[in-house]
Image 1: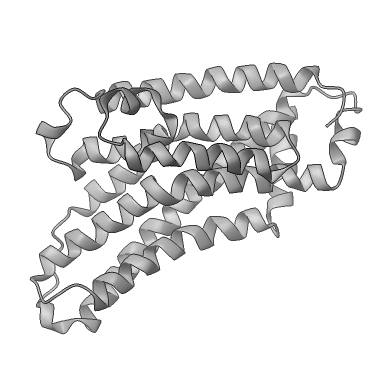
Image 2: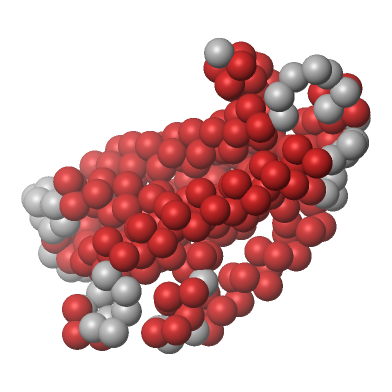
Length: 259
């Protein structure tokens, strides 16, 4: 009951927050960018080729470039609601259990990231159907990528990103400044671009896990990733790692006197 009340309170805070706005704007921005590239920069090809380019571009741009920054900023915005209002001093002084307060923040963050994937999928399909009207020269509509496969990739990327979400939740709750979260994610994203083909980085870099999940599921030739973790192993590591980080964060949060 205490967890439910804390979660309900957090949801009310999100209704008119920048965090909720970001959860819509970020996936829409990525989708619109790839849509414009497909509509105006792709030479005349068969529709199937363009459809593959379009969906693959959206997925890769989202999980490799946007998602780490989005998660870091989202968690910082969620925590800033209480940081900026100095509400932690009041909350931590109340005779209530502290773990539900932390779990509620994390649950809302996970819910917003899942919601962003729904927005991304919906916008991708809607603009994809619009694309054939702008480019009638490409021929009849015939998806070259199974839609169920596309949705499954987003779901797997979400599960693989749970460890990254848990890390940034802890960072954002520890510091009232955006600087720490953004500094960590800037440092973290650089290896995403420079070493995403490295086997050891794939196995030990949480910010790369979502991208690995989608390429293991079918966005990259299988013979180039034979020595990487399997998608099942990657998902288990992400879930168990998120549980471990969250446990440590709750212990740390429960010992605090004020924020």
